[in-house]
Length: 162
Picture (cartoon, helix red, strand yellow):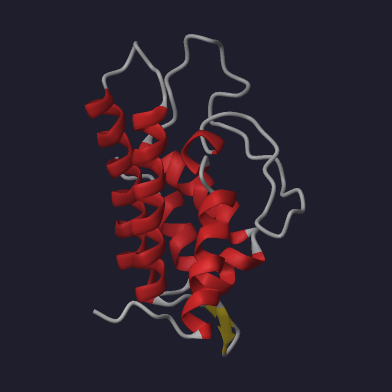
């Protein structure tokens, strides 16, 4: 079996690893106040959780809220935009369906690995992984409702579903 990669494949693999490392804590960055650093190494806007100003007994953010915050964080990163195929056409920002779905797969894999490595005696691993899946599901549903427009993604996650 031939395992050689051409130069373009090597560059894409290296870029993927860099993006994964830069976004390895995307779930926790979307649920806790922090300053994130983009894959280019520059500070992004602070990502605040839905519970930042709330009392300590407040509920954790919903999967939809986490998805919206993650999307905001990703769209602030030029390298992530490039990976998602974000482009302007006829006055709208569009994204590539296949690139977005691949990104969601990678982000789910990273989140599951992070949860498996994290020691949290209060919440069973299965429940934490199910929460990761719920966030990815919200992003996938937003994708389907978006018409592959970035604005549509944001709107779909901002819409109350209840």
